[in-house]
Amino acid sequence: MKTSKRLQRKTPLKAQAPLKARASRMRSSRPKMTAARRSAAGMPCLVRVPGVCNGRTDTTVLAHYRLSGYSGTGLKPSDAMGAWACSACHDAIDFRTKTEHTREALRLMHAEGCLRTQEAIRGGLAA
Image 1 (cartoon, helix red, strand yellow):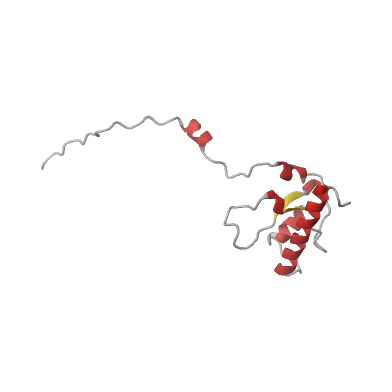
Image 2: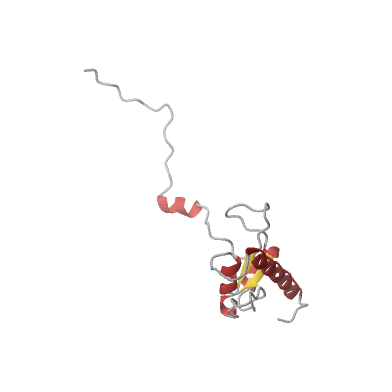
């Protein structure tokens, strides 16, 4: 039986950084907290899905409106296309909870919420 020779690398391997240093360079899947997203905190829900809205200002977030064909999985549209929504309305317009409303009706309520939010940001709408 022949014994094989050990292969030698022509170029040496680069030393890798410690695991902790490599982890800090990895990209986070968490979205950036922009000024528009921070401004939603404490604001009234402007989506207002009938029979769903809980009206709690402590759960209000910026809910992004997704246009078909303009965003992919994991991509959010700009913050200009967002509506202030309470947790219950946000779950309904993202279709995470079942409601009596059709998908088309929920999308329309979300779009109207986006318009109300834009008007409120400009200062022309009394909540």
